[in-house]
Image 1 (tube, rainbow over the protein chains, first blue to last red):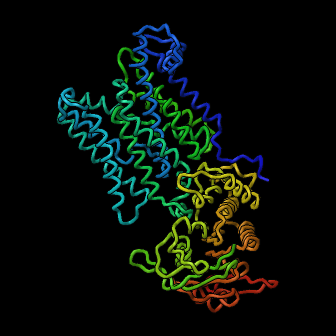
Image 2: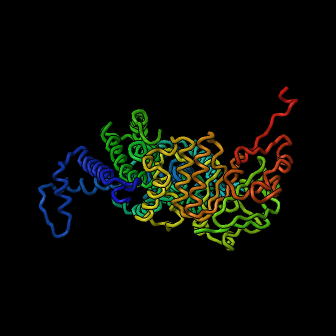
Amino acid sequence: MNAGRPSATRLHWWWVGGAALVLLLVVVIGVMVGPIPIAPLDIIRSLLNRVPFLGLDTDMSERTEAILWEIRMPRVVLAVLVGSMLSAAGAGYQGVFRNPLADPYLLGAGAGAGLGATIAIVYGPATSSWFIDPLPLAAFVGAIAGVAIAYLLGYSVRAGRTAVTLILAGVAVAAFLTALQTFLQQRESDTLREVYGWILGSLNTAGWDEVTLILPYVTVCLAGIFIGRRLLDVLAVGDTEAGTLGVRPGRIRLVFVVLATLGTAAVVSVSGLIGFVGIIVPHTVRFLTSASYRVVVPLSMLLGGAFLVLADIIARVAMTPSEIPIGVVTAMIGAPFFAVVLRTSRGVVS
Amino acid sequence: MTSALEFTNIEVSYGRSPVLHGISVGVHAGGWLGVVGPNGAGKSTLLRTVAGAVAYTGSVLVDGVAIGGLSQKERARLVAYVPQRPLYPEGMTVFDYVLLGRTPYLGPLASESHDDIASVWEALDELHLVGFAERNVATLSGGETQRVSLARVLAQRAPIVVLDEATASLDVAAQHEVLELIDELRRERGMTVISAIHDLTAAAQFCERVALIDEGRVVGVGVPDTVLTEELLGRVFEPSIRVIDVDGSTVIVSLRTEEASS
């Protein structure tokens, strides 16, 4: 009787295929664009050349090869990882907090990372004298500490450990950490430029080291959010009803906050605080496809990566030879784009 | 798949203020217990104890098994709950909403099987909602959303169904239709229904047993004829309540007093 009736919660293959194609296309463009243009065919040939036992010859000069593999490729790959992670974390937060304005920095991850980075810049030793660069470490620790404080504060509220108390705790913690950060920054005003440069985000120091540094975190966190995405739909009916459906909303929220925070802390430690991605990408996906997190989460991962590569291309080429901070680009390009999506959408979220 | 439900000496407090004072009441397997009483009497709170949505002392037994000792998931397989004002998430399709009823049968990392999907279509079929499957659940009318909630209850396949004011916001015709539907499902599937209900006439006509609650205590319990009397209702609500027989059916109304209408 039910044969031929498709499941209504389908993640259509053409959605996934389309998003993957967009990502691939943007990645190729991202690698092509720069002071020395590289032809797409050369890129594909060079890629195939790296496949073991294939041994395809390229007529690319060694210098171009180095630019491709040591400069552009790691930067584009890093943009994909950062964009995917911020978008997935944003979608996860919007789900567990049932709040369309939630973004990965909601519970103090952004403010904590900002304070950590500022402390490292203001008080840190000359980075070259250290075995590891203290700035990413300080940002990473700051982000996790910020969320941990907000979570413990929200959890200690006796009246109820609801999504709202957590958000309010996050707001308080973020305000406090931002005040500390601003205070430090004002006292040491000679570091202002460096601090702002970091806060607005950039991928221009990206190398394979950064990629390998964050890859484990991003892989685990993306996988976790992907696997648990069905539970975000259950939470959409509210904590009480979700509880009567046999799940534990508080525990689900904690798991998602841990995953989103770990992933966000890892990516901001190498990219700075790139804003807007975590809000705009999931909502655009929602408008264009479905409100179900089974659809929103995977498509946000693919398109979030594509969006950030695109933003990075603009950051690199718009004002050559200098670069625009990528956080400025995501907001300047993202906001009008999002406004158009909002206006033209007859979509599911009306 | 029928189960009896038994409350024994249920006490609930919100903070320091007690809401339920030792409530004991039961319903046989496949029966329909209506919980009636004034606003704030504790009807919703009593229902929430079965659904595990409130802490209580005393015992709630399903076929002799205390549900307080069950895991959240085990209880969700026994008890389906529709709150007074369900949250219908913006943008969620009717299909996805009904699919949530399968949650108690899924592991935390699992996704729905073909059987789960099939039982959703079955529930939609039964409630004539197949054409609504792709509709946004937040844009449906009151009567339609109640049917969607019942479809989710069916998909959940729980023998006990808890309905908190399922028809409170519906017009007379839609209310009657939903109540008939609940009764039909109960008879066909042998589900045990417990519902808080404001409309005393509806309680008299649909429920097999009625528990009248006032200020957290049971004032009367039994078949509607013995509980929904002018004497008891007059004491709990107001003296002007009349119980009338219309072609063999009980109708309960509140009359306007003479000094108020003059």
